[in-house]
Image (cartoon, rainbow, N blue to C red; front, top):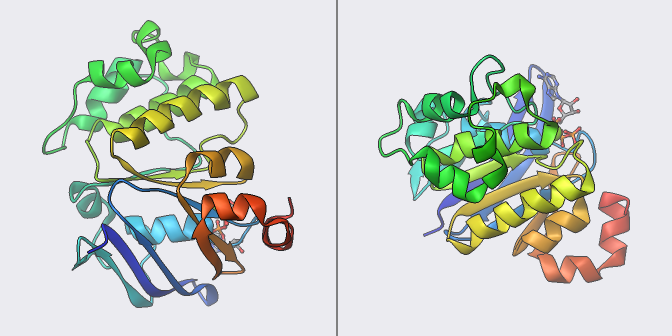
Length: 232
Ligand SMILES: Nc1ncnc2c1ncn2[C@@H]1O[C@H](COP(=O)(O)OP(=O)(O)OP(=O)(O)O)[C@@H](O)[C@H]1O
Ligand SMILES: [Mg+2]
């Protein structure tokens, strides 16, 4: 049984049909990329998994049990965490408080010390307010908040967006460590090279359709698919 299965999902915003029979699966301990151009439907796919968008047809199964139709907080309680593009950390709270708040309603939360082991830079900033952090540190904190709940599945929406290359490298190291420890991670990105170097398998979305599925290594070598669907 896959950890998560998205089965022929159709999703809409009002009358606009956005996702067309999207099917994907994620195996436990796998790192997966979901790639595609602007507006392809990547964020909508993550929101559908998280229950922010309810599919009009199709199913989302977590460990074989349907979760489509549940509220986002219920899906979070079952062990799925989305780190959205806009990060949503609390600017007025300290790094530590942000982490503690994220864990409040978790059944088995981690200790902030475990997050600081992944992101040593955050440890030095533990007493600083969220809004005083750099973009990279804010992204680390956003990932750290998701990790506090010890999720089965982590969905990262454009984690590298707007970050300097050196910060991207640091975040990549942390994500790689998470993957090595057996976490299941989905990365949505425009930074195709960085993402493919981190992931085992990838899907490509184009205009709301899955147009490619395969090993990340194979895609790296397929210039034709890369240029047709990703423009790289
Ligand atoms: N709240 C919304 N209401 C109406 N249409 C929306 C909404 N959010 C997204 N869309 C539209 O749905 C389509 C898919 O958007 P989505 O955000 O899933 O794409 P994406 O692949 O994440 O793109 P990007 O790379 O720009 O983040 C786009 O055409 C977008 O304009
Ligand atoms: Mg998006």
